[in-house]
Every structure is written in C-alpha cells, then in structure tokens.
Length: 268
Image (cartoon, rainbow, N blue to C red; front, side, top):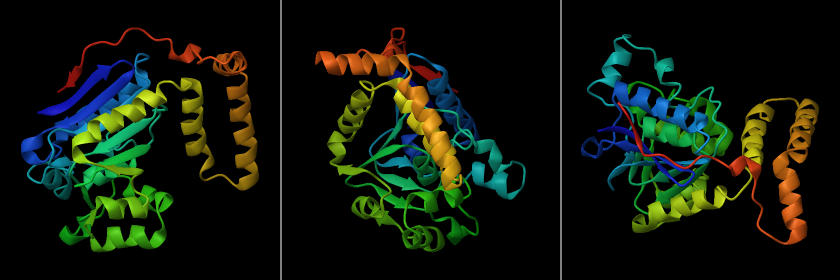
C-alpha cells in the first residue's frame, strides 16, 4: 500500500497503490504523492511521468473517508497541506500523463486535473460528489475546471456531483482519448515513449509558458511568449533539431542525455 515510483527508460510511472480501498488516499499517501512528483521534477533520468492507479477498479476515489476527511472537518489539518499532491504551485515542467483506470472521483478527479495528457479506460467513471456531503472540491478544481472545460459542463459537475462515463468525459474535454481497459497501460506508455523523443527543453518551455501566460493581459503575454520562444530557439536542443532536420536524421537532443534509469523508489 502506498505510492510507487518506478522508472522505465526515461519514463517515471507513479502508481497510487491501495486497490483494496479503490486507491483512496490516506494522509501519508498524500504526502508521498507530493514527494513522487518532486522526485520526477528533480531526477534528470526522468523526462516524462505516467500517473495511474493499481488494479482495474479505480484510478483514485480521493481522500480516505475514515482518516483524511475527519481530519479536515475537525480542523486538525489544513487542505493546503495537500498542495504538492494536487500540483498546486508546482514547478514540475515535465509532461504528466494520466492513465485513468476505473473510478476517478473527488480528490482523484482533482489530481487528474493537474495532469497534462489524459487517457481513460472505456469503463472509467468521473464525478465530484463533494456538495452531496457538504464540502467543495477545493483541491485545485475550483480554479482549474473552468479553465479546462466549458462553463456549463464544469458547473454541472461541481454543483450536481453528476457521475459521467468515459465517453462523456471525452465530450466534455476532460480526457484526450478513451481506450479499451486492457490496452490502457500500453497506450499511456506509448504516449510517454513518443514524448521522450522530443526536446526536454522545448517540453519544459511549453509547460512554463502555459502557466505563466494564462492570466496576463494580451500584450504582456505576447511579450513574455516572445522571450520564452527566443530562449528555446537559442538552445542547444534547437541547434541539434534544426541540424537533424537538414541532415534528414532523427535528432539526439542534448537535454535527453541522462544517466541510466534506476530501480523503483517506494514512497512511505
């Protein structure tokens, strides 16, 4: 039980591993998930992360109702202590792919919203049931959801706690693709393997820019975009990429030259 981080080539696979409880997160698991994201950020051997849940019943159903929720309602705990697990204020500039297997509810839904590319199994289900028990989805959802999908869809999910299937999640724009459950892992790893062929410098610049530009006035955003773009054009990766294009070969980006991958690291 806990959070696992395993490395395959330059891919870090983070697994929420408590399948007997539908991967509900204890207080310790929230800490460990934040630590796993930090490990991905800091380890030069990892270029891309895949986030998933153990088993085939659930990606994550959020906080453990027997421990985490009472700690919050009794004010023994501040929800901001989960910021790292929800990637609030994150400085992780490597792509994170969610492989959503089964139930994705409450805090699990909120963690999904912090990822960049999302694949869902055909049997996945999604919901934010918080208003039904007198609380709100404050693990990043009140900020992120309206920035990611249309207003009416977002409000229906947050106000009514409506449970939707994978195809509806695709229609809403919550996920990129729906795949058969049996092929979910391979499909997610395939996306990760494609991303590790890209320039890590360029991938990081895209993530940094998207975060920085989102709330700036248009003129200021364009000026910052130009600065970030110029930095990318002047990078070693850009020189290699353009040379490879001219020579009709696959690029070998300097940013991708990393130490050999290590063994999996358990958190907790």
